[in-house]
Image (cartoon, rainbow over the protein chains, first blue to last red):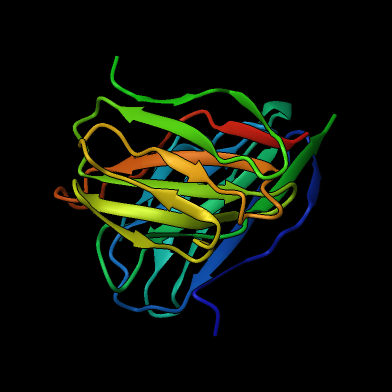
Length: 111
Length: 114
């Protein structure tokens, strides 16, 4: 099984829609989980950390399912400006300093 | 403001030439990282350093070298042995001494072959 698997998309949804995507990880010892947003030709920027109890930041909701080993990101009322690539990330099993990144899910919001 | 500075923003390499990409951080983070990103692809780890004077190979270290003589600096040299160096290079840092901390990224260097 790969360390991390992420649906590459692209997801193409209309403005105002709700969209969700997942990221599965293979190492049950992973402790920290994150979602990053990367715009075209830019660096990844932290969108939100993912906490065990789930967390929300405005239109964005992140959840962690340890039993099934995946994290999810839900975007409600999507905006044109949400168009980007979303990368999941988590700590590796060998060291708290090694972060594993997914290859990203491309999201395109159409008017 | 604290952050990570990468320079130059764009770099061109001639055949057989070594080039060095700079990465400096003033976040007082122990760990620093170099990633390579090709168009439409994810991040691939080249080298990382958990602490000053120590570094480890990542998944694609061949053709690259690094040093970590100072906590705030982690330069990456792309050697002539790297036959396909054209890519977007990202430097990142992390305070791993505190749990649940994310990586912070510089704004990248685009390297192209002349």
